[in-house]
Length: 250
Length: 250
DNA sequence: ACCTGAACACCGTTCAAGT
DNA sequence: ACCTGAACACCGTTCAAGT
Image (cartoon, rainbow over all chains, first blue to last red; front, top):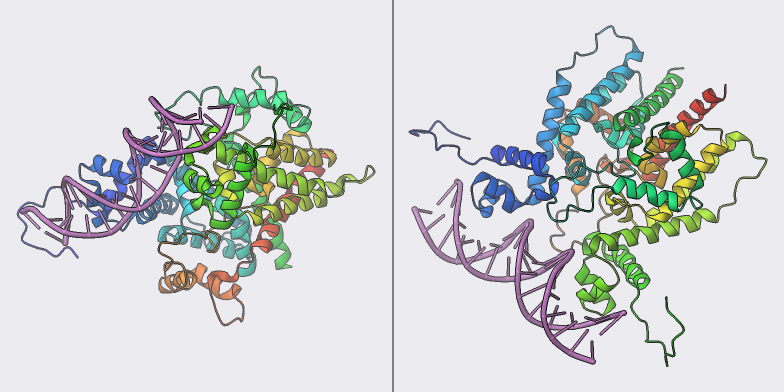
């Protein structure tokens, strides 16, 4: 729409929707999702809060746009992966899919707030759908029926995008709450202590905790390696789907 | 702490933490999570908003208490299931776990807002942990090492409690937003139409949509049976875990 | 000990007014 | 067309005051 008008010098850094959204991503990256308000975003851009409404309809629209940017980043990185060879065997759907999902995950790890926003969207981003489409394509290459593909997408759920909700927050993803600040440190220790205190009520849990936090001196809740656990869960689902696809073929 | 004081008639319906929390659950059930504010809850109880702070520390504490109530309900229902017989074979861990998780799910379906609140807790409910403990116990009965149990809990993630985040909201879980009201109806149709419009960009997606929404006349996005999909995904994970446990035994 | 009312520091957003 | 300032209707929460 920007017709070649006779502008002298371009109005230095005119506010655009793209600039607003990029700034919002940067702000969330830096200060966390809680810090992303219309007012703070405006301050970041050196304008008044109300000016934002000329580029986004409202905050929901802002968040829609912000996930779209992250999804575009995912698509970009995934697009750089070398595609499956034309003569690749059907079985290669699995490593290809694993690689693609872990690549998407690597992007989301750079935007820790994004998964929360993704979960709460009710409209969907074009880039997200295109990413899904590529996953579907991979499974088709693997010989999946569309019915199985459909089930598979549901079974993967958020894992398709590279995240899974943790049972207990590892603490630290949420930065920025400058207010209290004292409630966080030692939260893990407190949690462990709490579990120990009610050892009789959750005996298996306590035993598991002791068994898994191997010989290390500190039996904290920090023994979970997120990446390892994610890949474990993903592996189980991909293996299960592979078996079902094989059954379909015969 | 309520010592047997010489009270004439008990101060009719004194406000207690329990009554506050129960009222909060009822309010969220009726009007949705967005409607649960300190002010609206107070109005519901016929008191002033500030009076709530004598029974809960703040809103976070209120939400902690509210999930605890739901978790207690889960534990209650699960506790009524008949336990595994002493001589049950190791393999029976799987149907037992499936039954327990689906039972938990049935409770969460009665409190559609609860999963959102559960996800955002950073402290954990005693009742949730006790529920997890029983799952761990079942897997131990199945011969799992604690290491495998630990991986399993991560692999299940929120599925252990009976929910999984949907890729696209089925619309309708979020009641109460009395404001606009016009954005919802036809959202599915709009979504489908949007997908159709960009059919060239997401060809597999569109084909899947056409293939899965069988001969039925309306190719809407409403073809997903949440319960079926949940059980499918759960089945894949349980099967995968079973196989790994078997491998451990040999 | 429990409850209250006014007030504070935030939100997202509407609206009439500026250029 | 784009940006602004004041204002509105909400939040959660603090505080001093009531009984």
